[in-house]
Every structure is written in C-alpha cells, then in structure tokens.
Amino acid sequence: MKHVGVGLTVKSGWAAMVLVCRADRLELLESRLVELSDPAVPESRQPFHDGFAKALAPGRELTRLLASIRTHGSRALADALDQQLFGSGKGISCAGVVVGSLVDPESLGNTHMRIHAREGQLFRELVVGALTARGIRTQVFRSRDLDGVATGVLGRSESAIRTTVAQLGKSSSGPWRAEQKAAALAAWLTLSIKG
Image (cartoon, rainbow, N blue to C red; front, side, top):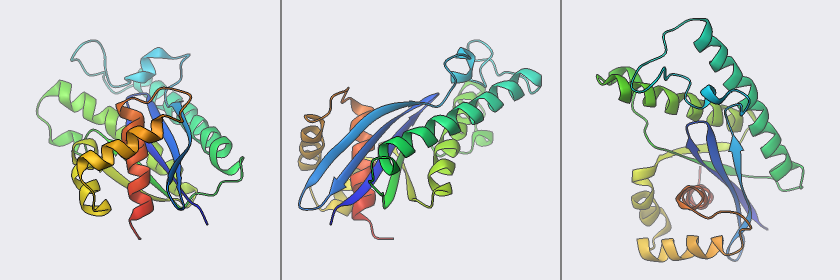
C-alpha cells in the first residue's frame, strides 16, 4: 500500500506544491507551482505593501486585494488539490507546509518586517485552511528548522536526506529548486510522523 503526502513551500503570492508517495521507497508523483495571488491583480502578490517599506493603510484598496487573494488563492488551491490528488485517484494522508516564519506580525517593531510577516501569515493561513478543510492532517514547519526536524524524525544525516530529496527531483519535469526540495522534504516528514 502506498502512502501519499503533499508538501507546499509557501511564498508571497505563490506556493511550490510537491506530491510524494512512500511504499518500499520514496517516489515523486508530481511537482507544480500554485498561484495564490491573482495574476490579473499584480499588487495582490504583496497586498500589505504600498511602495517600498510602506504599509498599505486599511481601507477599500486593502479589502479589495485581500478579497482577491482569498477568492483566487482558494480556487487555485482547490483546483490543484483536485487535479493533482483526488482527480487522479490518489488519496493523501497528510500535508507538510513550509513557511519562512511563524512570528506574530504585531510583535514586530520594524514596519517593513511587519508587512512581510502579515503577508506570510495571510498566505500560510490560506494554504493551511484549504488543506484542513479537506480533512488532510497538516503540519507547519519553519524553513530554517526543516533540516533539524528531518534528521530527528527520519533518523538520517542531513547529507543522506539531501541526497534522497535531490534524487526525487530527477523525475520532475519542472524546476527542482530549494522551494520544491523543501516541499518534498515536508511531505516526506509528514508521511513519517504518526499523528
């Protein structure tokens, strides 16, 4: 029996999505990018920005951008999950979501850092919400913690883990950069964590 997991590395406005399965060995099923912001509304990629290091004030424009993201991002995630997972007959047991930070944006004194943290929180919550709404067991990992968690959970060296993840990419028809590798590792981790 194959166990299937999905990993997503969340960025501002998009996510790298990787589907892996594990039976006798780890196997890459698919890798793709998911646009979380609406390409027709370019400013929705960084909705809290109003120019460099300046926050967009609450009001009609911010409300419009956030609504655009929630509508477009939710639809894009649903389509990707349906096509990639359920549409192809592959049920998944878990998801791993990789993010840059889990800090509360309001705890940050620097305005520019707070803007980025708000955007990270927005896109993270969009992705986690879509997964949990489908009943998929989801775990969130900070990218800087991923290797340390992996060595503990998988019982392998960082070098051995990186080699395995790099090998997965050889069967990818698209890019296999840091975001895809992190998503694949997060999926592998959630497949290995009982819960």
